[in-house]
Length: 158
Image 1 (spheres, helix red, strand yellow):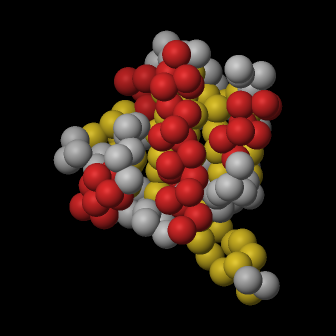
Image 2: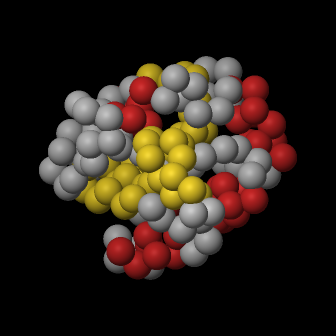
């Protein structure tokens, strides 16, 4: 898959096994049979990423009740993810993709505009993956604030 290739509904979600905040690992394939919301964010403990993570935290019980697992992915090291999880009482797994290979496979890392400048970085994105590991929705360049509410509307969740 070429860098920055965007995923579309029907594509197979690239599988991964990445380190988690709690010192373990998480394999996407271990979540088969559940719908997965995988969201890519630039950096733990920054204002926008904290807003987004807390938004998911506050919605995770209702998303779980409707059959969804939530996973956050960023290029952060597991130790930073652990601090983020503890500081903001996050109740879903965060995985670290330090070499950015998985983020690139999802089209969530590459050129983006930041304050008018073109930079290389994480493109804030959310992927909804079905029970068989297929992309159901791929949202790129999402806003940190209000994204979970929009996602719930797009997925027609109560």
